[in-house]
Length: 452
Picture 1 (cartoon, rainbow, N blue to C red):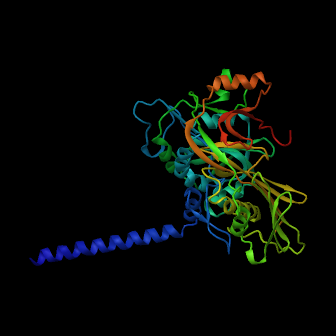
Picture 2 (picture 1 turned 180 degrees about the vertical axis):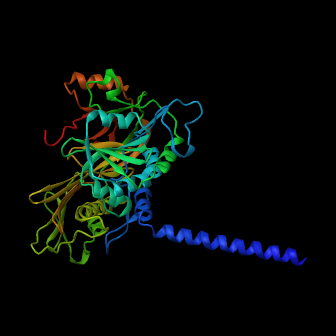
Picture 3 (picture 1 turned 120 degrees about the vertical axis):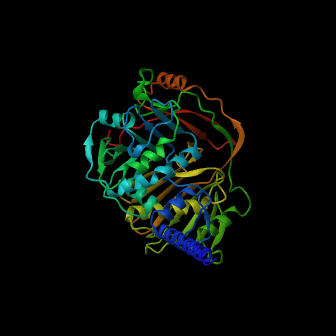
């Protein structure tokens, strides 16, 4: 009897210790810098706000790729005793025009990516052949962000940390090596390819994240003679996609829309005057917002003291460029909260000009970029400490439940060639010219470097 009581007491003590250890582990995980930023980026309904302003709905982040490819070539040794799916001779799984699938895979590889970016060694210039081998001949994952993304901004979004890498990238690849991982990318500023080795990042988590995927026949244009006239890095899938048709609307056409918008942005209604010319105007001191009939909101700070409504906020330990971009992203999300429907924002570019930094964002629908008449969804002009101008095209998109009829990729590529667009990328886009319905179609994208 006494032995039974002692055993029960010992088991109870074990349970209490396990519970305490579990709580301790969860607390430590919550303190890790990676957790908070990643949760904000991946959680579609995450609350975002600027100080003293109302909560905004985060409809996505520029950090999420619009396309990804997992490559597990036949015969490549997998670390840690991992193996390919039974019967597979090699796996190439491409994810494009599928926002949910890309997000799920990116969640799996974001940890290894952060480790590689944070611990990367000195970039080594490589040739085109080595870039192609990294995409096709070794185990790894390729990511395409569509916009030009400064690596310090990417690291800031993912972990709040810093990186010694300064390149601006659209496409990058993370690959497994025997002694760790390697990062490959093309610097969009000069068109050159680079490789960085990480002595810290481990290969097993990356290989484990990719090992359960199945092949879907994805390939790059450089792998097929039939697509030699395209940008060689064009990602193609064997079957024609079936993108949704969306209804489009101006969410600012209702009475009181401008008042609601500036209130969300932090204007005090008690000190704001409203009047109409050819546009609706809201003015508070040196800050004003003009709203056109098309739903384009334009902000202007006309003061000279640097004390406008939207200072650049220091939000992470990742430097001034990150602070500028993130301040603009938060502003855009605040303006778009409850107004953009099913669209996501992604970073198009961040460029320095004589009068400040120009930062642009675009809309995407299920991983397909939206082409607007104004060229982008949001454009900001930022000095060192202040957002002095912005223009946001407010559009709301809702799925109609029907799909667009799309030509197979081969016919789409032939159409580009017939228009003399050799060397350009074939990709789906939505063209929004202000109508009430938008359908996807093949487009050409010129990826030549800015130096060219």
